[in-house]
Length: 199
Ligand code: SF4
Image 1 (cartoon, helix red, strand yellow):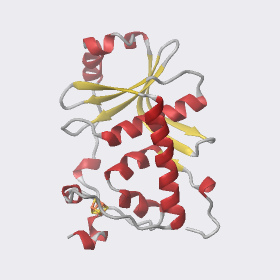
Image 2: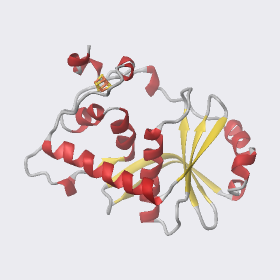
Image 3: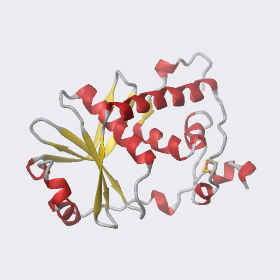
Image 4: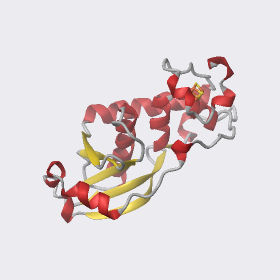
């Protein structure tokens, strides 16, 4: 990291939002102290089948969004120069007047706040590069064949912007963050070799 790096030069990825919420050290290692991670089973994400997606979208709670009429795009890279943010969204559904980011979750359990911030990050990019509002985002729980709908309210988008600034501040000042309060997170972490203080 060069000393002259300003916050404006720090281009982040949407996945940083999710990882920073999980543990800020993960993002620190990736940007400030680039180290090699040890792959864990969590990183080996399979492909969702079209059948599962179609079954999910046929459910009543998604029907009201008119998704069956929308156009789907998978694994789409998006970049906002204004936000200094880019990311690859699992799926986008575009209807006539809306666009919805969809994140696929291949592990069991309900989505956490970190997934909400990830959806908010995609929403900020989409609103910047498209002229359509993003009012909801979805997490498709592939293993459970369920879907969770999140309202993309202005408050969560504001929190997301603040989080991006916080991450940039950490990177620029090279601040080594505290570990998360729950050490259970460290058990499956690909950076555990670098966090000797938590063991
Ligand atoms: S081992 Fe624990 S403290 Fe270290 S990066 Fe992973 S989750 Fe964070």
